[in-house]
Image 1 (cartoon, one colour):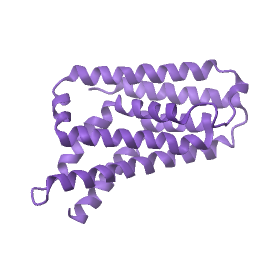
Image 2: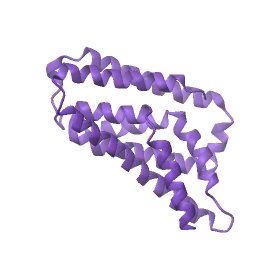
Image 3: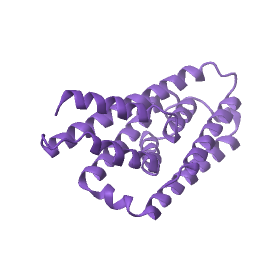
Length: 201
């Protein structure tokens, strides 16, 4: 695969992911609530979802899904409901329950929560449907290009959301109280749900 094309793909895909949205809000919220453990586990979940999106696209399943707007709408509203539930739990949590500890939530649950959110966000799938084909060339082997673009996208996803999580950790140390942390986390989830709900499919 041409390195210039790959570089352009990295710039394009990275610029899409770095924009604030449901995934970044979730990464920040989890990092504020659960600490350093989420700074790696949550991005891993998003990275896995990026890989699944790539498989959908390059296998042709993505094109089929695109034809059925109802499927995208269902995915979107599942994600919205999940974020609203997280926001509700954060707002009603007692102040003293926020203690940064890896025992508060299993790594596996955190991982699958992140992956579920990303998979129910139609923005990710639609962006992949638009971006990937732009960087495929008939001059190179299709499978080779698909593998390179997929792994590049996964690496970008992990890097971007790790940075969001680590930035949130730096913010957490400056918060005055765990009650404020709860309110911020709840607001992040609520904001993410609003953004996702407002997106057209």
